[in-house]
Length: 230
Length: 172
Image (cartoon, helix red, strand yellow):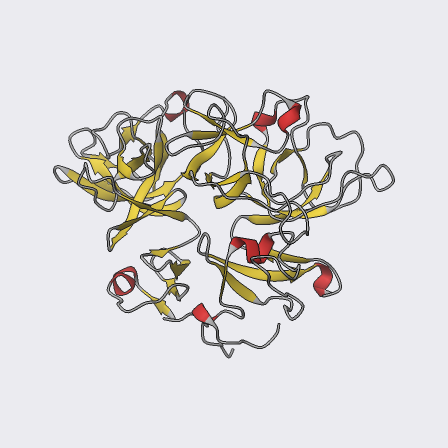
């Protein structure tokens, strides 16, 4: 653990917003929410000002040459099993079709891509990127997933789908075209409800490292830890 | 065994001590010895990992322990059934409401429906007046279960606070 800077709240780095901490372009010079994390050490702390969460830095195996993750209450390291790469804001469900037993210690998750019943396996929202499933390894890259609390999620657009205040929010179950997105529903008696729309203002989510890029549409969602389905 | 002092801004304090603090700035921290959580000051109200912050729409008088739901403006009001239940009000400060969606918090039980509670009882929203809960004897076949009693207590009219393990699933 590095020395305590004595910043706000007794943390190492004080207050940083969601994009400074998690956005894929946060370490790109010129990005609005640029934050050089090269000095962040294992077990350093920061407060995410977007949702008032205290987070702790974690490099796999404590080695700062590995990727930097941020842990907090309800945030876990998982393993991507999806055929697509994952970026922050993707909603993840449990992997449903385990045909092999790859050696890894982390839960298997995927975006919904058809098959199974995704509404029975709601897990949480990705906070980091991960490489796609690899036939050679038997799994994809690791990623951190937030299972509860207020977090930005990628959302489907359009008045029928974009979450608004008072809406239940649902994992998108009707089409693999919208894998990883969540949507609104006004019906309480339906499957795959994962939480509520916390803020219906747009929250663009950066999906690559370009300073400006073309962020995906997102909103802040209050996620429960699970979805009661039946 | 030696110890190291907690690095939080205000160390560890009881709930009432935290609620009485003044002059905080956003991002300051304290350990809540009653709820056993680290709390962060949002700039308006203390909150923690088990809660989210809302404001009231002004139509109801909302107290600590009330069940609330969110309206189409993003503000909260007393919960009127079970379908839209959001959580329980854990703290009210400067016009802001810290609403708990998981964890162990006080909830307001309707004395008319449930004159007493027993540790382990299921508590439900849709068999009590707006904003309150009552004991539900058949939780497995019911909607609106918000959690389970953590204490045995005799009630007092019209409602009384009971410690409850608030559950976090989306209810329908």
